[in-house]
Image (cartoon, rainbow, N blue to C red):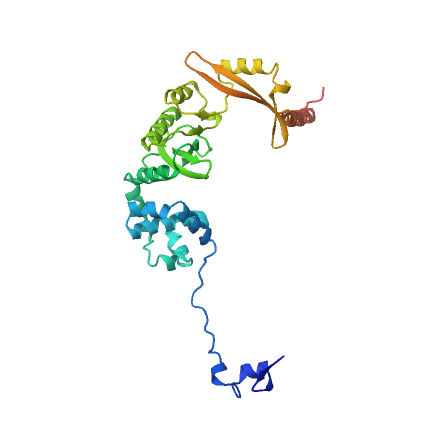
Length: 326
């Protein structure tokens, strides 16, 4: 391999090792080694999402610039590479965030002070109000409730109660509402473990109304199916979707009645290219009457039967192996 210099072929290695015969304007300065390298690619999609949801703008209305950027840095860390709070500063120095928001005071004490400031104020509620107003009306909101255990002795809301994760630790309850179309959380709240689900549910409805959210549909799992919750939803005129359970005698009776003709061709539909039977039903109680649907999936019935008989055979086999000979 060579190079044409002043009309004469010159070996590349010679040209690299010597500047003889090469005009000064063609000599490249020596390359310097990079001082730092920053991670940038992981940050780009999250920055785009933050901009589209106007999160930086909303936080800017509630915090000064430094605190706003600290909050965003901590949130981005939770998504990109979750780490203990005392390690966030090291993580931050290796990312392009340290160039966009230089000199953030991400020491443990500064982070603790900022989080305490947020927790002791109505900032979360104000931020959620801004999110709700940006979504508009006629939304499908998904609601759920869960609990978290902790070894902490500094969280006043922690209480001993119903153990869900076999940890035998004090817990607190977290309720959350997610916008189905956007797939993002828009509201949350925390409660002591002693506060029952019905109370948290009622408080959530009141907070949604306080944020002036209208014409929405609430989607919940079967854990919220109870007479008191249904009465609350009907009283507040909130459209909802909720699977029923066999806890109510009226549900059992309704299911038994629907089974008689649910396989009628008039109830046959296709969902994801698979046949399913859907029959309109009405659940009546003394306190309320709600419209719903009874679903029958032939394929799922077959799969559950096969799973049941497979487990039954395994149990039978174990009993026979451990049986005492007569």
